[in-house]
Every structure is written in structure tokens, then in C-alpha cells.
Amino acid sequence: MAEIKIAAEARTEFGKGAARRIRRDDKVPAVLYGHGSDPIHLTLPGHQLMLVLKNSNALLTIELGSDTHLAIPKQVQRDPLKGFIEHADLLIVRKGEKVTVDVRISTVGDAISGNLVILENASIAIEAEATHIPEAFEVSVEGLDAGDQILAKDIELPEGSSLAVDEDLLIVNVTGAPTEAQVEAELAEAEADLGIEHDPTDAEEAAAEDAAEAEAPAESE
Image (tube, rainbow, N blue to C red; front, side):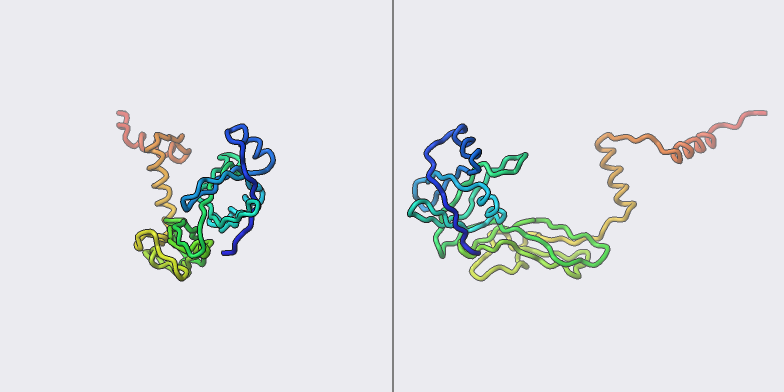
């Protein structure tokens, strides 16, 4: 993964008011820490940081005056409604150092027709060199059939990396697609559990009337 340079500014104002002023200038308050050093409070360019963090494991070179620091995102806080970055915690790393990170997983290819591909875990934790963190893993489901599974140990890791989870962690599960009748039955059961009732259809009302007539005693002549 290539290093991405970001020019930072030292931050001397703190508190909610200061943070709002920083965001109004399209900047993001951040903290850089790690390796026993005192936390360094920064402001980072908001638009650039947003683009960089589309990859959650981006490797950053933070330029602060004459100093540079190699870092990876540790925690990013976003506005729950608008999605913009409110604050970022960055972890200082060293070249050759190993870190534990979560890497996104996606599937490629198509299973045999009539089956469902269920991504049980959309990311996986691995231990990798800070300068060689993969952006994502692609796992092929081409030609898989119901009952086939892909486990954590089946994912091909970069050289020098290792799993930080149980090797038998289920990643992909392939099952037979439910029939229309099964889907309707599951929906009806879920609605019943929630106490949802529907007005009877014309056909159901007619069937009920026919059944009532059949059960009614015949009138004596």
C-alpha cells in the first residue's frame, strides 16, 4: 500500500466550540499517538482525509512542520446523519512493525444457480506489516453449491501476514434458495409473532362462507 502524504497543522484550541470552528473551515480535529510518545493534537484537511479514509487501513505520512510521522487510522468518528468526519485518532507505526487490523472482504463470481451466497463476516482481522496492509480480500464463489463454505483459513494472505482470528471462522456460507412457499410461511410466522393481522382476501372470505354453510344444520321441511 502506497504512503499518502497529508499536511497537518498543530492544534492549540480544544473543546466543542473549537472543534466546530475547525470543521467550519473544512478541517478535522485529530490526535496522533503511539510508541510511548505524548499525544499530538492536529488539524487535517477534511476533504483529503475523507478521500483517503475510503480505505479504512490507509497508510498516512503526516507532515507537521519539519517532522513526519507514519500512521494508520485507529478510530474515526463520523456524523451519524451526514457522514462527515468529526474526529480521527491516528496510530504512529514504524516500517517493519506488525499491527492488527480489520480488512474488508468481498465476493466475486457466481455460485450455482438456485443458491444463496451469504457473507457471514464482511471483514477479517489479520496481523500484517504496517507498510503492507491489504486494502481488501476478494474470495471467489464461482461454481459453489449448497453446503459449500469458505473459512478464514481458506483466504490467501499476503506474505508476512497471519490470521488474528480462529482459522475456522465462517466467512462465506452457500445455501439453497428458499421456495416461494417457504418465504411466505416465514413471513406469515414473523407477522404472527409481531401481532400483525391482515384483512381477509375475497377468496378467503368466500372460502369461509362456504365452510360455514357446509357446517350449518339443514333446515327441516
